[in-house]
Image (tube, rainbow, N blue to C red; front, side, top):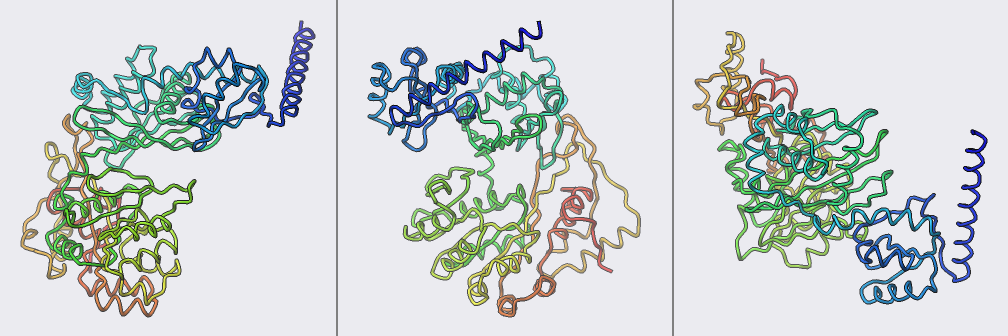
Amino acid sequence: MFQSKSLDDQLQKQRREAEEKDAQRRAQKHNLDYLDLISTTVPTEIKAMGLVPEEEAKAARLAPLQIIKKKLIMAVFDPENAETKKIIEGLKNTHEVKVVVSSLTGLKHTWDHYQYVTVQKDISGSVNINEARLHELQNEIKSLEDLTKQIQEFKSPYTSQILEIILSGALALGASDIHLEPNDKAGDLRLRIDGLLHTVFSELGKDIYKSIITRIKLLSNLKLNVQDEPQDGRFTIALKDRSIEIRTSLIPSEYGETAVLRLLDPQSLKVNLEDLGWRADDLAIAEAEIKKPNGLILNTGPTGSGKTTTLYAFLRKVSRPEIKIITVEDPIEYHLSGISQPQVDLDANYTFASGLRSILRQDPNIILVGEIRDKETAEIALNASLTGHIVFSTLHTNDAVGAIPRLLDLGIQTNILGPSLSLVIGQRLVRKLCPDCKIKKEIDGKTAEKIKKFVSGLPSRVDKSGYSEFDIYEAKGCDKCGRLGYKGRTSIFELLQADEAIETAIYKNPTEIELKELAKKQGMVTMQEDGVLKILKGITSFEEVERLTGPIIWSE
């Protein structure tokens, strides 16, 4: 029996080899490229396959594979077939068609993807969550445990419905990201809420996990049969009052593909600058700087620290009909009305630097550069700020002071950096204690004395009267906060003004330690100090501030 099976396998292999050799000969005869659709992983795009109905494709023995710009890659069995020629000629009205020759077995393998084409017509990059169903789920899902229960009780065979539950649950719980991570037995579902990851479900079966990933690929217009390379896309949750953009990222891992879905809710853009967590003295400085006719304003911090929200709040504050604002971003996280927003496209060689050069020819007053990553982008941004433009941008450094050494390390000349830099903001997001369940924390006399000394040592611009009496609180957990003890986030800031002393120091290529001393003399309140002030206001906790800024250092 085993010999018979081995013989069958051998014969099948020989037949496959003969079939592929025959396809190679046909390709050579017609001076076309040959493509093995079985052994080689060829990206197959549903939008390409949708150009030719399944019945017509099978009758003509061809398969549309992918669209690169306007070029359509078409695999065919026989280039001289009349039906094949007819379909190709029809497509030439809208596409440049590149024909490759493949075997019939390879084509049949590709035709299997037609099962998703009809689905694609229904979703077209958008999920229409029933409003009533969404409200129903939001009423039912008050905590992570509630969402876990919903998934456990899920019985429907339709993947779209479990994805709907996951998306609705994420919205109901205020999650910023959905993480899907495969393991050797199943898949994990985690949500990032207020900056921290929480496990929701760790028993997603392999089949349901793969189906969810496939559904996400369909929605995001990604290549279904590519599993060994990273892919990025996006789709939309269409609600009655707004559309929520979902940015998707898939990467290969040991047990399958890992997916992260970033939820971009335009409602977060409606936050006014004043509502981001500023102290009055810091807000006054920021507002004065953004009203200047020129200068570079940088926002620093890691990914997810609220930099984009703050910069967009700046744009909302300064936006007027007589002012032209242009941004260059990668990717565009939120679409703003009345503002031009070109997106970086590396495939088209449209980088931050080339995009910035282009928009300078559009006569802007205010420019937002999504991120300064290299010397070229930095130089153009700095020079723009010297020639009558306000430039907003971000930089990945640990604190505000660190931005100056970072720019100097990129190769920026001190005579350019000094006069162009206006303000550097360091920022983090701390979780706010749930106002419905936070409990008062007892502190000992020694700690109370340290706090009083800390308040008295603050710069004179800080209104100390609001901190003469204080209560310290800690998290507990209730139904209103999903039993997490925290609900929502606020920012902690530090501001470094590029005054005359800072500008003079820049010319001397200072160390970070020297700059921190100057900032202290300038009266800068650090992010950690701003966090302590928010603790004294009962907004957040010691644990939360120390999580983001390290152990609190009290002045001696």
